[in-house]
Image (tube, rainbow, N blue to C red; front, side, top):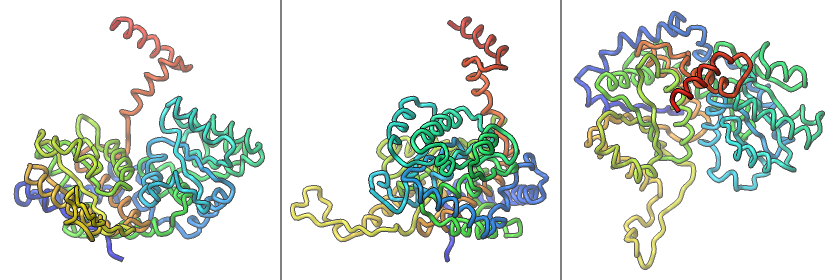
Length: 451
């Protein structure tokens, strides 16, 4: 099989000659620090060789649970937030039918995602939809106390038990959580749920290739063995022993940091394939949460082209030159559709008659890249042969290893996220959660002073 490819020429041309190659010593040091576990955050490196450590027996175990859920459920709700749902959703949306929610597919259950917001209307509409349906739940939370997910799971657990009975419900509720501690672990053990472990040394945003991602993906009917094979091959192709000039992850990390040093502070992840929208959403968390620290870090943004060219195209073409683009291009779509001829030709598009729609899309991509480069926007291109499990597995591991390298070159700890606790502390204080009395008093005094 071929592999995903990386083209940095349209980005490197915006840097002094040899600037990308000048990062080789820093990139090499970062790779060795990851390999030797001598970097900051070295207690969260379980993802580094995770693909090569996945056994056929483990895949079979995950698949067996997925098969049970697929047999017993017409709807499966994945409850999780951040890394506990974005990776799975990214893969399922990339590989699935764009209109799966409308298609009456009796072979595959409908996969829904919840626990990623506190929208009262959303939760009410979800529970209304599930009334009378045979649904199951995959509850993904290391602690079991993350507000959004815990609130949603409490609602879903109650509804599932009321509709299916407590005994039957325990067969269609699965916990993916800590091995020994936390509310979700306690609940799973008490209720007798099947459970999988989130490894202590794998952070949420790096957890796609653990049961966090693999179980929902298998439930959706996709081949997790092929997904893992793609990641395993990319692990080899981006290893510390692979020369810098041949290592996709090393090159991506180097050119990103070179552009950042040159004042390009925003990276826009661009796709021309609507199915990749949630790949970008997953990528945004991976890089934003890993690099955005100590007043540093490239801001990760995303656009779906050509759609967003009609809303963001003007700014990208002529706005502040603080951006660069990384384009994910899918070489071969899975379906074929030809542009029809029209006798009246009122829209003037008969010159496209007989062409594949994808050819029109590819020319839009090429034309846009040329225009943006001419407008001063560096462009990185990642080429994916086609959308299948193997290549998505490659893409996932490529972004993960490049993120670890890039964060260390930036001289931050890519594996912690101390900044996300600030809003939680304020929220708990405002809700009068026990133990937050001092914070609550301080906030009330502050709000009164600001009134």
